[in-house]
Image (cartoon, rainbow, N blue to C red; front, side, top):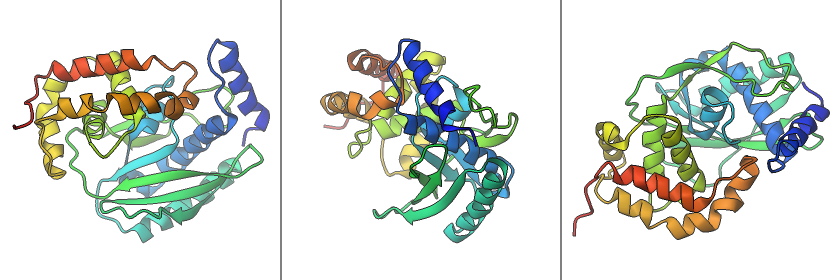
Length: 280
């Protein structure tokens, strides 16, 4: 396990580079998540858990991505929660033996979830205080693009005890974009990270919403939703997302882009797909 001073060094370096100070607890969690994924890479659960979401973007696709605070997976085959937890306990033992990090199951989420296993892990890392991380495992999902075997980024030289080379099963970028579009247009969800992620991905790739229309329809059908009105649903969230923008995201990156620019560019990308309007 790296010493606490390595965490402090990263935080100070980001400030010196002209950015915002990232809390040391956020950097520590990033380190712990990387070690957890390294343990997963060598366990049979690797074949059953497809890694997705913002943490997958950071740890396996873009090293300079925003920090993320949870672990999201989709099951690739049926397996009970009991078997998942048994496998995780084996991973925790391996991680502790290899790094000294202590990770353990803490509690199930108190909110009911129909299509996911949601729970918290407790960990003790380089910082004095223990902390936790949320894990969400989707049970039933349609995967429209092939999963990718991606290496786990070390990201920082100061994470110097992380081995290089282990890989995990990760969502394709296209799959992440489609699911982020579903999340951003979900009227019951108000997470600025969905907007940021789409902005980053549209700016970093040549992907276009219109080219993923069939996959969008497939995933919407699973949720008993339709594509009509998606653009309008996103537009209606502008004020809510603006209010939450800095509070939810400022601690996850050293340079937070202006909300108005991000929202305008994402809405422009969605409008370019010429999606059907809601029925009158």
